[in-house]
Image 1 (cartoon, one colour):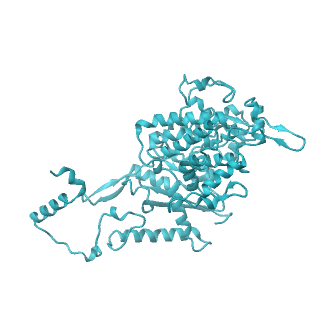
Image 2 (cartoon, one colour):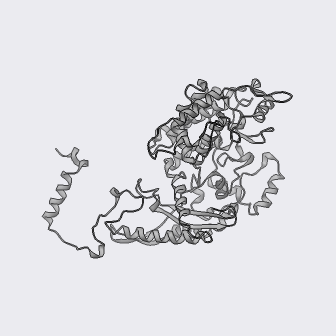
Length: 503
């Protein structure tokens, strides 16, 4: 709400809940509000210290809780599974570097990166390392970066390996940056500091401590694709600089720019669209009739004058990537380019399913590696920013952490909009959020005991009790054993789920 103000809500989710309740607003706990004139940045662990103390207490000692089913008390303990945030905040939460030569937090020092001289960007390719050792793509040269690839795929760091790397790093990040800049590129460390999360006894034993946000990655991948195909200024990954980089690397020399006295000419690549083809794609998006609440009205984002898309949000990119883009490019691009983009869209569609078959995850991992290799053969190196590279690690996190919808940012972004709506006094936004959150928690607690009220964003069919009066005015009545048996038999004989067992 202000360029001179920053507020970071710290939310926690209880995962041992039924699937239909896990990511609902009712079970999101607002644990902290970090506010100030600037973002916490790499010093965020200072702000998280009280929360870490509570998590340590919940792990070591626990709190006494009451089990209403067994009617007894027990010691309640908790464990922090992972953190969920966008990629820039990933570096702050994990203490690793997410820019430059070692921008991939999973590959670390083995990140395959190239500094593009003319584009002045980093290119992250080398996806052939994730293929089997005998795959023919490993021996091809000119189709990729001009070299054969025989190196094995990098292995993710374990918690103990991370601790060894950050054990001696305690200095301020400003001093650490100077130290990194003074070293050679091949010995640059991939971690900035030791984060406070390692004070948790179990943290180093977790396979995944910080998850990659699929929403953020999918949005950036789709934005790069649309920007390059439609040649949107500021978002396209193709241009004179990208073509000069290809010429510098002695790759696809037929795409080298032709420099004239007044103008420069760029030869058409396999992904280059004419104005008529761009109009065809945009007219298709304008004429689509989508169901209500399926997505935003796409035609509001189409600019036929400039032949580009403007104002798209994360969910709009989500629907474009998974359903609309494969249909929009039919009959426009060459078959080999169209097939690679369509396969990438199908990959995200399969990845975001709510039910995943573990036996198909290895095949899905091989599929995304092949897709990235195909795109690397057709698109320039400047297209491969860190977001494109991170897609190769998404299936690994599905294997270890379960379906994606437990971990992406959509429910949290919606909840942050609710928190922003709590603000009535712009001079005290944190107080408004805290007061409204406490009031909502109190109302939610009371609504569980009132039959005429509905719980916020919780399906009514899953409510535990349905009363017509408050509990304080309820009448307890005892029934005979035979009446109880009759009621029990009546329910069994009239329940749809038990029909197949009745003969």
